[in-house]
Length: 593
Ligand code: ASP
Image (cartoon, helix red, strand yellow):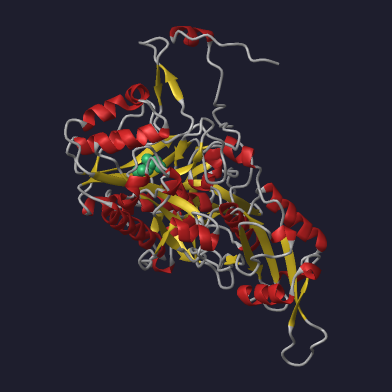
């Protein structure tokens, strides 16, 4: 069979792919290329070579001996035949056939690999990254890269269908307002001056709106010099978009369409519409702006139960609880550990109550009792109130934090995830839009409010008149998309009017001069006809990691950095040669110690 050159399988060197052979191909003469996964000799007359390419493994039978070892690159010519009776391998999709009478050509010998190319092999992260080119040969990594390409393709198609234009924005740029530390690139032609690698195309895409592009998107690379975590790398990709003459509802619609398309492309099932929740509700019920809706364990308010209480520990503005089902069996030392964790998260303390069946009451429906060092301080009414408000049953554990409202919520929200949560990539997929974020998130050292999103975010129209008098109460037109407890992305309606922008800058403590110095080019452009506009960015690495069932975005990035920001393969970051520094007009200050 000669495959046509346009076939996705055939090239000038091969006719088929290893993983594609099936019983239907029996009798076909094939030429395959790939890497030796395994070689087994049966005496001098027969050798078995498992040949691997990105589609899978097929067994090749060579009459005589063959001088190949693991990871040699070879071409095999032979004829597809059924495996002898009783030797089919149910674990391989190609397991019913083999390629017989093989002639092997070594295309390139290889040194023994640093680790076996198989999914179930545990390998140290640094070793994997140092030999990423071998690591990526593992079937799961191949699948992840291809899944990522599928997601990209679906997102692009959805944006295209919705009338968005793909525009590339510069990587050498000026500071942007996301608030993260930036990577700087010294300029050779202007010694002493630097470019900044963009934290996002935020300002560029807003300029594209002024430019009349109307609907922009880009699968953009963003760079932020921040500590790395399971869901954060220095460089990451996002589906970045912006639309003119559009508001929050439009953007939620555009993004939902793209993300649901991507989900459908990888899972075959289109999730139902994405529910919505206000930021205030998310905080109240889940103690976070990234609620994981795959499980309940919602926060319960006990403030009314303990109003005017004599229990000192509960004399706080807010008393909140969560119930850990069947948690009463946790040991005392485990409970101490959870208490320490609550303190580490900022709580003054944590009260726990094991719910037990009252031994005195007996019968089919015994009354409930509490087992806790605090129990003897509770009034009967408080004990009954706690049980009825939490709905806890015998065998459950109730955890209570009494504190300032937001702190009580966030501490329990975190404990909820740590005690009841599941790995992020584990189904089902539960999306939620979180809307009506506060405009500001606390205050900086100078006492100025800190923008919760970025300073170009439009305040909620109903709250605009309180911008100066009570900034903490002002909501913004910012929204996040959350999936399984991970923030997938955020966006906002932008300020397009100079008067509102200068009010926001002034509340933020950014004077006219500073605003001009930092964002003058944008503010200047806005004087030349800025349409109302709004946008969003979806974190691609996170989205793909969840679809791939991975807890760390490194698993879906071809060449990621380690936790300490290094690339063990290239050795980056590396010191620069003195000549290079001098050419940039730079000199190193010797580091202390
Ligand atoms: N620039 C924002 C970000 O990268 C997203 C947006 O507001 O469009 O988080």
